[in-house]
Image (cartoon, rainbow, N blue to C red; front, side, top):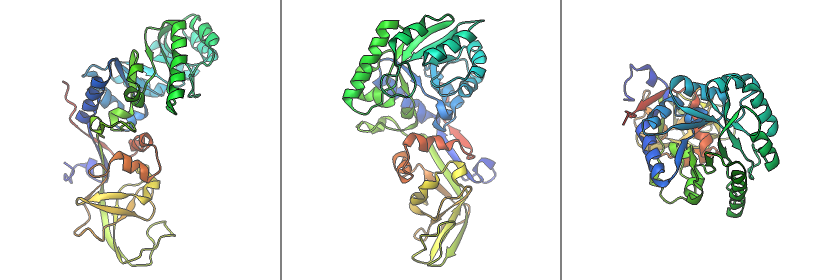
Length: 361
């Protein structure tokens, strides 16, 4: 498909996303998890396209999705008949629309609970109360304030949740115990704690639901041995725009500190950090003709250069693979010193998404 020169999607750079791989990652998680799965589709499904991913997972039984912002929730609600939990702040200017559309709000403080209650006039606000059990990001730290919030009018409690810090087992156990205290206080219809890592590290804490984000997109939890159960669905590619020879001693692009040690064939790729390729991946490699080519110089906003001296026959129009093939997400992220989730979510750039698979089952 990438050889279709007349298809504008393949003119510069693109990300091919295999929806069947995402579906299989989901099915593998269902086999590991005895409770409901809540697919996390924030950051446009980690760069994979939230609506397309949600549609495929709904066909496989997913009923509730989680996002980070009101805008992300509205994108899903406008496209699909689904329930959406916003795990972060929904601002006061957005609350009326969120409540009217049935978005599930994360209520994380008494002050915020009062604001939500004040907006819940025409209909109750659907809420999951968020407890800060030790991550210290969002959530109630006082059970008394949590009790007071739950008693406010207009709040229809549908769930209670927290998020593990995953620093060490003792800390995680303390967090679980704090959540259980809150559960005993409120008796919520649903309680959820674990994410992708917690799902496999602490299967005994899967409770009523597990939130899986990174797992869906091929980020395997550290120390989990069955790495084959989650695979990255994305292949990030770019066209070779030009190949030219650069003499030894010259620097490539904006790099002033690493002159070439030999006369080198330098291929310019039509992709840059504005397309989602991390600038810090200037120490990385791409794959061309099945072989590795190191990045030369610094990654630019719209272009980047690689050294193809040892790969014969590279010419303009060839395809370079930046992520995929022999380059897995772990290595790709490591080159830039990034969290793997961050590396994937950067695929929200200008590179068009081209989907394969995903037929309804």
